[in-house]
Length: 210
Image (cartoon, rainbow, N blue to C red; front, side, top):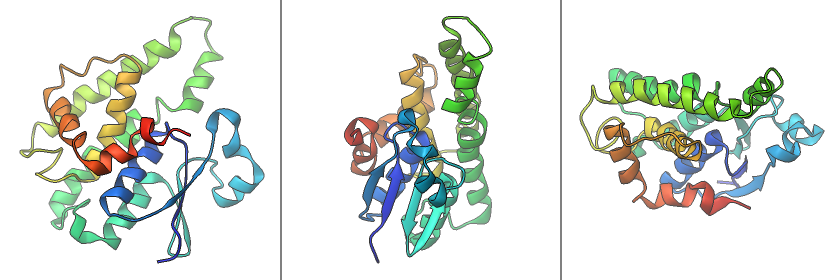
């Protein structure tokens, strides 16, 4: 395999997901930091690579891949034995539903460009914090109920799947914005288990911050 390159931002939830996946699959990669706060994602060179101007972008197998869940699914198909997606079609649907509940329902509302626009519409000093806490807590409450439908040590089953790759970065964001996750028993338990795994530890923002 030729050199694998990940363009990411250390605090990006989407990048965090892909770092975990690469670590779980034991794929060596080089990181190119894209500082969102400095607008590096809007520079022409990066837009040529990723026209959306988002992170992450993964260069692997001579291909340029974007969108974190699409990247993770590519990696899951590359190494199906790692179990990021179950082999059974119904089980895959459950894992995707859990992952999408984070990546498509919580994450977009709380993304930086959305909240930045929100702040142009109000003078309320704590608008950003209230917005984040409301939508993250509401989303995790619903996700807790979804996870509760299934048995296992992780979000679905007894090994990490794509669902956990989405959940753990969202829990990191929840703590960052002061959301109390102790009331989400299953989520807190899963987070504790993932925190013991080297692949999750190595991907943590505190470990990769430039």
